[in-house]
Length: 337
Image 1 (cartoon, helix red, strand yellow):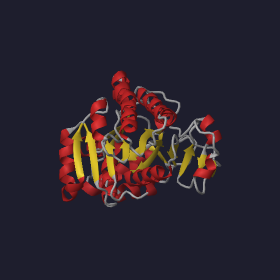
Image 2: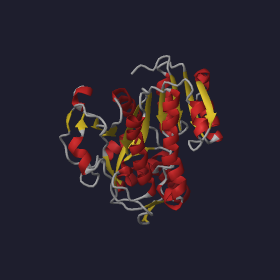
Image 3: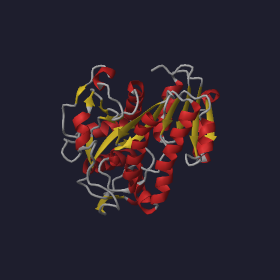
Image 4: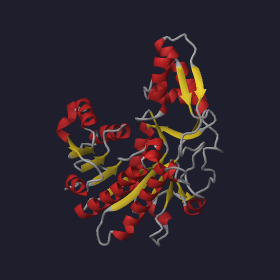
C-alpha cells in the first residue's frame, strides 16, 4: 500500500508500537500523520524524538471516550490505525467499567467517527487474550473486535473499510515484562514472575508493525487478521534477561527468581483463535485470515496466495517454543537491554 501524500491518524500513537509505525510511515512521505493520545507528557517526549520531521506530525490531546474529539481528529483523514486501549490485565480486572468505556465504547466512538468523516480504511489492533477470555481485558477486546466486524455490515453505502489484527505480547512495549525484569535486577537483584512454565505468543515491535501494514494492505472489510507468532517459555525469557543484564552492567551478584502465582484473570497459556474460527480461516505465510461472516462471496478470490488453513495448532501450550538463543538475538537486535 502506498501512503505517499496520504493523511493518517494513529490513535494511541505515543506507545511503543505507535512510534515504530510512525517512523515507518514517515519514510513513505505522507502528507500528515496525526498522533492522538491523552498523555501530554508522552506526546512531548515523542515530539522531541521526531523533531527532525515535525512538519509532518500533528499531536492531538484527546480520549477515545470523547466522540466529538474523535470526529474532529478524523477530518480529511485517509487511514486510521486504532492502537489505544486499557491493556494491563490487573488494572482492567479491578476497574472493569473503565476498560469497557475505553476498549468497547471508545472503539464504537471511533467507528462512528470514521464512517461519518469518510475515512478510507480503519485497522484495529486486538489481542490473543480475546480468545476464550478469562479476564476483563480479553472480554473487552473481543467485544471491540465484534464491533469492528459488524461495522462493515452496518456502514450502509459508506465506503470505509474496517478490519482487525490480532497479536500477542510485543517485546519491550510499555508495561511488558522485559523492562520490569531489568529494573528489578538492577535495583534489587531479583526477578518476580507469575509462573515459570507460562507460555506466551511474543514478537518484536518491528515484526508487529510490518505485519500490521500487510494486514491493512490486504483488508477488504470485516476480517480479523491473526498474525503468526512464535511461542516463548517464560523461564527462557527470565534466564536470557538475567544473563544479558548481568553481562551489560557487569553484575556478579546472584539474581533471585521468585514465583508469585497467576494474577487475577491471567492465563498460563494463550490461544490465537477459536475452534469455530479454524473452520473458516485462510492461511498466508505470515498470518491467518478469518473472513467476515457478513459477506457471502468466496473469500479465497480476494487474497492472493491464500489457502484454507492447514495447521490446526494455535495454542501456546502445545506449540514448540523458540530456543533461548533466538530469543536472546531478538532482544539484542531490538536494543531492549
